[in-house]
Image (tube, helix red, strand yellow):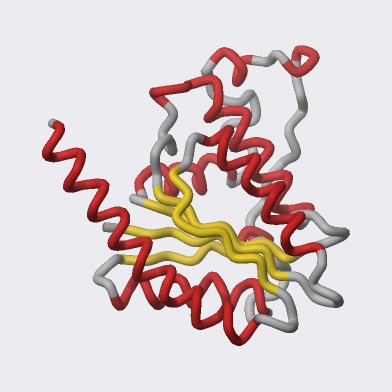
Length: 195
């Protein structure tokens, strides 16, 4: 079993990254193979909304930018995983800019494929880490949940994190990693029993 985490903060050692790593620690302790992707260290082009937003990706085909950036390499790693974690810092009560660019592209190629979408049904953990007052974390989580619905993911947990609750949420993140592995295993078992 493999769990992949993507963290979209520019800092490799900041709160957002540490939370993603905590989930992966829990998943590793539960027996999963894990991988951490620092999104900002990859080149991801913005969606061109070609053909007035009705480009070939909307017909279930690959993006016209395939091969021009790192998007598909990351998508393939997610498709090969059993579940994934997405951690974002909160900027202006929302996801980071790099998170939105990546998730916009992901939504464009996944949603039109419906039942054949490579990420459909995968276990998912979302994390939004806010500084300052922390009031933006719930709003960012809400925005992340909209992407989850388009991507047809199976939410395991959503963790809104602030300066005030970060110690508590760090513990919760590690426990969530263990729980995620249990959920994936339970889902695999149910699939085998149905199959």
